[in-house]
Length: 245
Ligand code: 6PG
Image 1: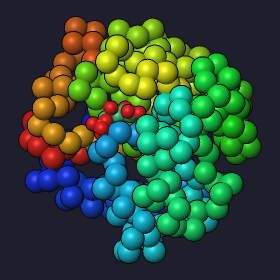
Image 2: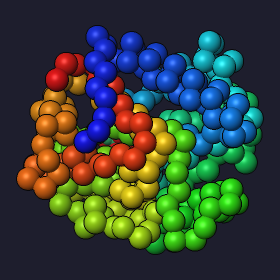
Image 3: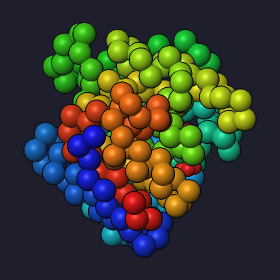
Image 4: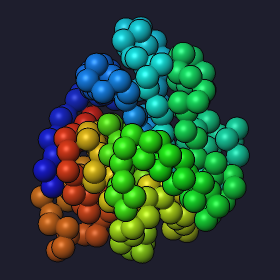
């Protein structure tokens, strides 16, 4: 895996570094291409980052009018549910910054399964093909945030799931293992994750150290089968952790 590991003393410092990484990327892409596509991750770890991006200095630096916001995965619950990844991003960030409503590309996961996946893929095709891409290709997001679960999952791609082998569709329904709720989800697929221009993993908690070691030192073939070890980044890839490997 061709990724850089950056270790920080705590989640606050990690989140400030992530805010700086995102603001710099956004300024660069808007200057060069007039827009910036940012994929938010779910779970708890990015919430400190969301608060930072909603406040100076980063809120003033971000080119919100030219920033388009997406999600890497979503739970099949209403957007106002506390289980919704959109809900936390909206409360902590999107409701507090001048990002145009048309730039917020929410996964309508409450529609459930195939309907929600097809709708989100259609929205992505409109966004990317409108930029001159051609059918039968995969989108390239400018910056994608990802977390890593305690079982090595990324987005909603879980260990042993056939979802990990999807190599045509950009978006698919997924089911979390027993014990991880909500179980029904919508997720981007590995080919889309791999092609992000910049992948930024935010990983907090030394309990995930062994998984990260696996990601860095195992080969995807002989490794543990953790989904994070299956990522094959085509662009820049950074793992930011609040622990040392
Ligand atoms: C989700 C996330 C998921 C998350 C990891 C890490 O919908 O749950 O997208 O992939 O990023 O489970 O979550 P924490 O940051 O809470 O550890």
